[in-house]
Length: 113
Length: 113
Picture 1: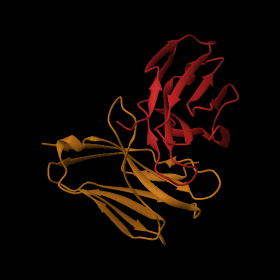
Picture 2: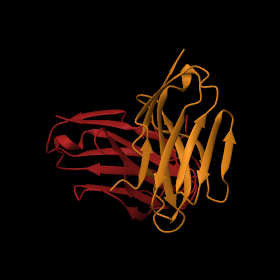
Picture 3: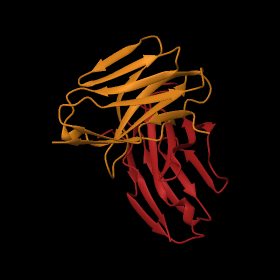
């Protein structure tokens, strides 16, 4: 158990809908990263927050957004969902913003029908 | 463009064998190189990591070899066991700027009893 929690574990929704994925980092970790894992694209970085502020963006679609709250939990919002958004979404946390160990949560499996 | 190239895609070894997984990178700004192990339905778990100031690091049965001049690094699993059967990902990140992980495409390892 990495200490990173993610909810929900599974999510099934229809095209065009909006969903919110939630992540709680390990106790004491200030940095949260979101990654998408799909069969054709592998593990891809989406976005990073550090102590409530956006730190870096990767291959994140404009339909996707995220935020980190004062209690350091983070939410990833996916809107206008398409079939191709079906994937595993992982949250990772690290103690600081830097090349430190990142610990991954168990993921949320999103299925868009 | 794949920033970290990983091979082989899959690997089958007998119990007790020493599987070797190789990764290569181009970006000389990378200075942190972790390996992750992922079981089906689980999040990636940090296995071992190395920084470029050393050429080798061992933790238990896992060893990373690092060749800075060749921009290559590899994972060796000594005395492999059926429980090591999983997908292994190499990754890299930068010390400055965005610190997200760039992942290789993964190697599916099967250890036959």
